[in-house]
Every structure is written in C-alpha cells, then in structure tokens.
Amino acid sequence: MAISCLHVAGYRSVLDVRLKLSQVNVLIGPNGCGKSNLYRGLYLLAAAAEGRLARTLGDEGGMPSVLWAGERAKGPVRMTVGVQVDALEYELSCGLMPPVPGGSMFDLDPHVKEERIRLVAGTKRTEIMKRDNATASVRDDQGIRVTFPMVLPESESVLAEIREPHRFPILSMVRQEFLSWRFYHQFRTDSDSPLRHPQVGVRTPVLSHDGRDLAAALQTIIEVGDHGTLRVALDRMFPGCELIVESIQSRFTLSLRMPEFRRPFEAQDFSDGTLQYLCLLAVLLSPRPPSLLALNEPETSIHPDLIGPLANLIVRASRYSQVWITTHSQALADAITKETGTAPIRLEKVGGETKVVRDDEE
Ligand SMILES: Nc1ncnc2c1ncn2[C@@H]1O[C@H](COP(=O)(O)OP(=O)(O)OP(=O)(O)O)[C@@H](O)[C@H]1O
Ligand SMILES: [Mg+2]
Image (cartoon, rainbow, N blue to C red; front, top):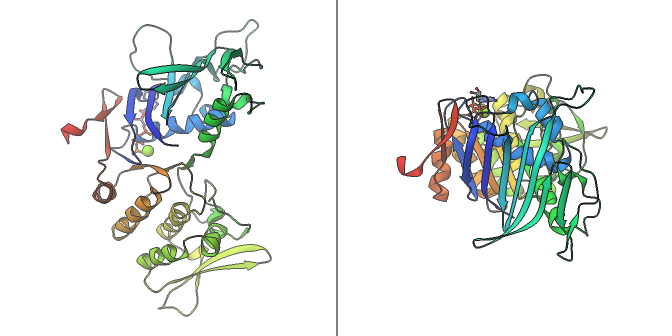
C-alpha cells in the first residue's frame, strides 16, 4: 500500500500542511522549519495503531505543548493527522482533556475527539468508520453499519481496540498498514551505545529502531539477503575492507578488516560515520522491506563521498518501500532527484508556521 497524501494540522509548527507523496519523498529545509514535525506526525499514526498515542505525545511534552502555539482561528483547539493510503482515507483529531468532576492528574493526555476512515472512489467517499469521542459507528464485514462493540479509551485510537479483526476487516487493514511502517530517527554512536557492544544474535531481517541488533541484521543480509549489494556498498566506504560478524558465546560482534592493517577493528573502534553507514546499510538492504520506510537525517556523520552511494541505496530501497527522508543535505536530495526525477519537498517557516515551498518557485 502507498500513501498518496499526508495531512497534518495544529501540531507543533504545522498549522495546516497537505503533502502529496510519491514513492520517494525527500523533505529538505533549514533548521526548525518543521521537517521532523511532519515526520513525527506520520509516526503518530503508527503510535496510534499500537495504542501508544498518549505515551508518544507524552514523550513530546504532552498535548498542551504539541498543539500549535501561535494564533489560531476561533473554534475548538485541535490537532489533526490524516493520510490517504491507496483508496482509504484515515484521519484522527485530538484536543485537550475536558475537565472531569473531582479532577484528574492526566491533563497532558490527548483527548481523541474524532476519527474517521473513508473509502475513496473518484470524488465519492464512503464512510467506513466515524468516531465521536467514546463511540464509533463502523461498517462490519457485511457492510452493515454497527456501533463499535467497545467503549473507546478517550486518549487512544479505535485502531488499537480492534478485538475482532475478521469482523472489521478495513479497520484491521488500516491498523496493520500503520503498524508495518518503519521509522529510524537516530542511531546512537557514543561509546556507551549498544551498537558498539556484543549482543545476543538471532535472525534479524528488520533492524531495531535504535540499531542495537546491527551485527545480527548484517549477518542476516549476508545469509539470506542481498550480500552482493552489501559488499559493494561497504567497498565504497573502505575499499578492500571485509566485514566480519562473529558469534562469541551467542553474542554477535562486528569488526572490519582493512587491507592496511593486520588486525581487524572492532565496533568500539569504529568512527561515528562508519557505524551510521552500517546501520543505514542494514536498514536499506533489509530482507523484509516495509511498505513505508522513514529516515530522519540519514546523512548524519556521513562523508560527502558516501552521499552518492547512500542515494543509490535509498533509490534501490524505494523499489520495495515507499521512502520518506528528512535531510539537510542538498547533495543527497539532488542525487535522489537525479535518479528518480522526483523533486524534493522543500519546507520553510513563515511566521513560525511550516509551509511547503511550491514546486513552481524552485
Ligand atoms: N507547539 C508548537 N507550536 C508552534 N511551533 C512549535 C511547537 N512546538 C515546536 N515548535 C517549533 O517547531 C520547530 C522545530 O521543528 P522541527 O523539529 O520539525 O524542525 P526541523 O526542520 O526538523 O529542524 P532541524 O533541521 O533542526 O532538525 C521549532 O522551531 C519549534 O519552535
Ligand atoms: Mg529535525
């Protein structure tokens, strides 16, 4: 499934942005223009499907701090995130918790006001699910409109409450889709990072979000993935190098043998950029590609010489996954555009508000 449109409104610096998405989406713009806010907006949908909407917004400071802080039109204070995925539109709107008799300490939680799934056919829209506060009306597997059989938690999505997936196949499909998206925000490369230490190895077709199972993920590519492309990509970083994954008492260690040195270097010795590049290889060559792969600033610590190979790998990954990249690297954006013909999405901040610079201004 592919996302054709993302709509975020009232969330952090994003007062109202609608993005048409392609197979490869590169978001570029100056510091603080809202690249990560849009990335987070998308991530909120995955969090909602998992039942972690309140927790995720809590990690950002809670509902009052994520709501657009600038001037707003009169009317209810809302934050909305929505997508169109193939022929399905999904939208979630939250606001602040209403006061409760006796009071509650959970006033940072989001209060889900509305949630909706619609089936799109041309200009026609058929409502599949419509939630108002704690109740939702849903079309079941027979197409009959019924009341959703659970009282909905006020700070979580309907999607996280599906107990009978066969009875609500479209809801279940939307949930599965959001859960299948993969996000990589940042890989820790400091000396205490788990990436630098041996980890118990099991077959790992999907690198964990923090990259802690890097050695196992690379070994999985070597055994069942595109080892050839991995080897070529490694060679672009260190010509003639050899990647060594060893299992010592079931813990996988990673090292690199360089032609110039007698002993291999272990993960503790790797530079930050080397670790970052290895993580990107594990992500982009995953033997189980997701439907959406979102990477925040993948060029971090990467030398300009590796930007070309990185762009090649991103474009290669886009054969199997829709790709979302936020970046500061014009060179990366240009290299991806050159290969795909898709222009980057350029963002700017105007009066504190994230705006898309329209293509015709480029
Ligand atoms: N509630 C809010 N209302 C309005 N603006 C906000 C709110 N919360 C955060 N912001 C603004 O969002 C901006 C940060 O956006 P974001 O993190 O998406 O930037 P970015 O483009 O990813 O920048 P960088 O390249 O530095 O990572 C900050 O300038 C901050 O002032
Ligand atoms: Mg950012």
